[in-house]
Image 1 (cartoon, helix red, strand yellow):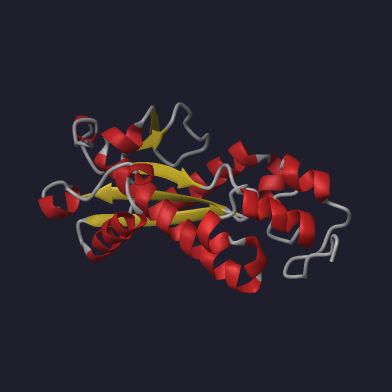
Image 2 (tube, rainbow, N blue to C red; image 1 turned 90 degrees about the horizontal axis):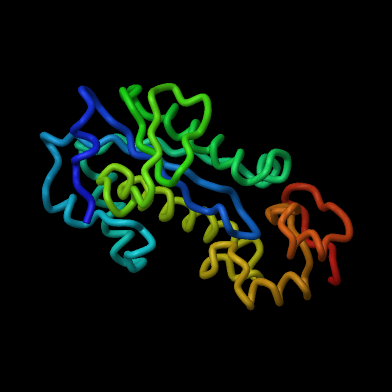
Length: 216
């Protein structure tokens, strides 16, 4: 379970940063930065926090709502869309989203703990990579939940415009149903054109918001 041991090493507020959406074939990558007031936070809310991938959808939503309702959590969210992903690659787009999330916090922390083994360049504060941080650091666990729930909601909204791809359930990942829909209906403006399954199917380049054009 996560704890505050790493945050407690710093004399001031510490942000946890994590992202959701590096692997999907469609949609943005979303990052969240979360600072927790360790004095004011409710232990019952802390008990809800863990790596978002370990939580059921119901538990993630419960934790997300508790985070957003609590004054002890300060949250910033950032994203990078498919144009950015295709222009600079997914890793660099991930870094863009993380910098935007950190900048969206109401106040700059003294340090940021970033899930994984890389620290994005150009952070506005000291940064440290924490491997498996979403399972060991409360602030990173909270960020993983915020990023995942936020991105899933965005993909559900996009699914209303493009219902054949099943984004409300696969969140843009390359599920069998999503790949079949790509074969049948083609590539949308929200697909990542540099990702191999999409690139193989791409014939022309519809603009943002246009209908798919391949094999209609």
